[in-house]
Length: 341
Ligand SMILES: Cc1ncc(C[n+]2csc(CCOP(=O)(O)OP(=O)(O)O)c2C)c(N)n1
Ligand code: SF4
Image 1 (cartoon, rainbow, N blue to C red):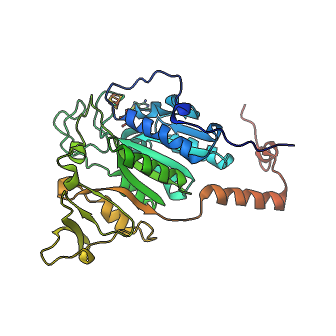
Image 2 (cartoon, protein in one colour):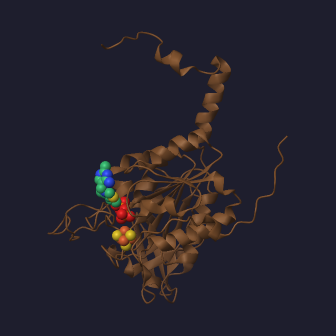
Image 3 (cartoon, rainbow, N blue to C red):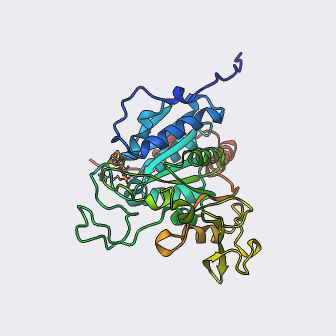
């Protein structure tokens, strides 16, 4: 007979591993780790039900530092490993930790398919717009013109924008936060954890050694009210130090407008994170500081859709009912087989 014992009350410290953290002092990764440890005890899960799976990169050292199950896998393949695990063990909460290089370069294909399947995974992409671990080559999110050791004359690649990719693949939960905005970051991670289906979170993360200040415009206390816009479901898109600016739709383009001069709140675009049509969320993902827009932070999209892990396990159950439990050895040797000598 098994008895369900009440869960022990856990604290952030219970989620700290005994490993020495090897990130450079001042790296934004520390803050993401601290917020993750803070969020974990609020999930009501025992530690052994939580798994962190990463690829390769500084960010991908993350699982070592969490006192949960974890796997530092191979470059770009964390979504594939996580997909296998979550399918076989739907009772686990599975997190994927990746970087802009790991997730969008070598792992782009894997990331896209995990997202479009709506696996119940929480994917956190640490975006520092550089390859940190390999000492500062440009990454898929580096801006055009970026000078690095691998692009001494400036990058001529068009950068990828992680949230546009995720929304393009119709992710059911899409959010952005910033390493230094710790309250917002914790709330965003918590919402991702609570979402059923793929939750994709981009975190603006500073690499103070190889790309220091990449996100300063969005962090500087003097400018951030004008360069970012906090999304709130059902609310108009308003921003600015005096909350006197907004975003209006002009045809198919977002337009920055000044409130008051004949323009009222009702004229603005209202945020609807629950819209099943992803076009407006995509439009938000295209608002960039360099094009004169405030960059949205918060939840862009949060919709319900059937989950891949549920559907595949339903199919397995149905097939087992119809045909009995399969025998892999028998299957391998079924039909026409031959031996190569
Ligand atoms: C198959 C393979 N190709 C290339 C590398 C080299 N490599 C290691 S980490 C990395 C990029 C990591 O960048 P990012 O995901 O942005 O992580 P960060 O270190 O910035 O956190 C590369 C190219 C590797 N380890 N394995
Ligand atoms: S190289 Fe950059 S991303 Fe890597 S640990 Fe150092 S500061 Fe962080």
